[in-house]
Image (cartoon, rainbow, N blue to C red; front, side):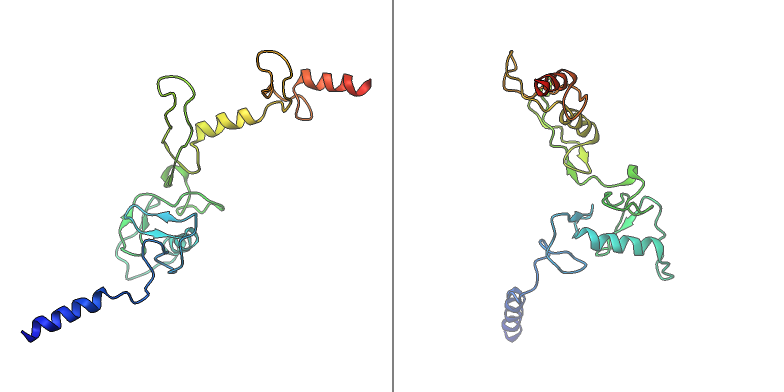
Length: 186
């Protein structure tokens, strides 16, 4: 009977919160709160990008004679559980070969948020894995749209919309550039 009482006391002591940091909201290397650019590895452990980058550089460059597994070019080891994953860190900032480069081996932590405007998937999100908020192909599409004439149309069926013609000079298409020159001459 005495063992049962001591066992329940022991279990109660385990359930008491002693102020430890929650593992879901902190970096498992530095025990600091997760920053917005945190990385979740394939094993489910989360780390701040700078911490996991430094650890990956250490794993790839320093030789440890006690370590029995040699990592290949496209492999990283989780510093928390030591599970080897076949993806490198996503590319951010400086490229380090075997850590966050070459690109074909890197993780893509985000999903593309581009919404299709027409076609079979109209209104749906792309949802491809990507390095940033959009995948490469949709990033090119939005860049092309941004590089148009900045003049607002004052007549016609597109009245009130931006011209979006290809830029000739000074951020204007050829038509609006020549019109602005005529107005400035008068």
